[in-house]
Image 1 (spheres, helix red, strand yellow):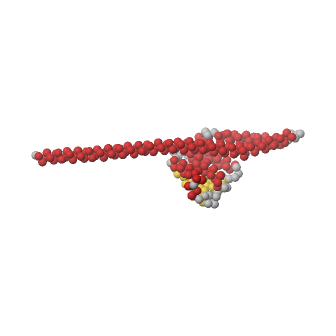
Image 2: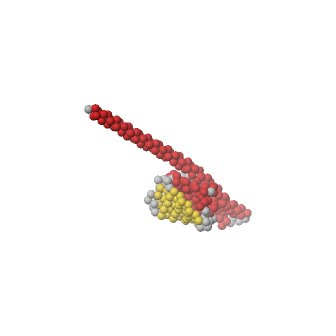
Image 3: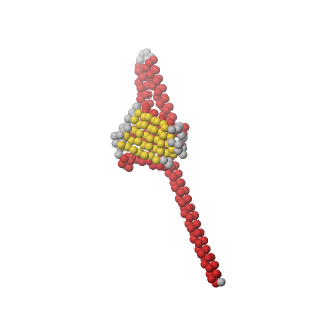
Length: 260
């Protein structure tokens, strides 16, 4: 009888120990899960904060670049056209008879200056980025560069065009704008080719120039800050950027990004 009583006691104690161990394991798992969940939430908040900061930074950089471009275009294009119109009008004023041909040329110069100023005014409107697709925005940038006559540009489209998330579109545009400025300032290239490849779930953009290229260690130096920004921004929007360059052969930048 006593042996049975001891066995019952042992079973109760063993059961209690097992219960306590299982409870401890369960509590540990729950605490571990909550900790992971909290860390994940913190990471998401941190990513959202970084994304918002990068978005604002990109907007400010785009505005600064736009103002620089506008200033240059007013000085180089509109200023010269209006100077020509002024000369033409002065000649007309000095003549005793009205030169209708010269008057028509002066009117044409003023009209061209007005058209250029309208285009510049449109470029100041940031809402145009919302109204246009990424492809259309880049086409306009390339056309502007092409009109300068210094560099020949070309754009190719592969696949069916798809809309990309608005905030991502802005950051990608800033990345491409940064890349284009690097080409204009440093590469001494004669041509720029941009290729849009619309895949089912992501977009691939490849920009290639035939400039002087650079050594890959350039990216790690202070001078390569713009290129590092492109790489970091691609990671921030869930994509990636690959930069390949060969001295005296040119540079290619490939940006891959999901649509959403």
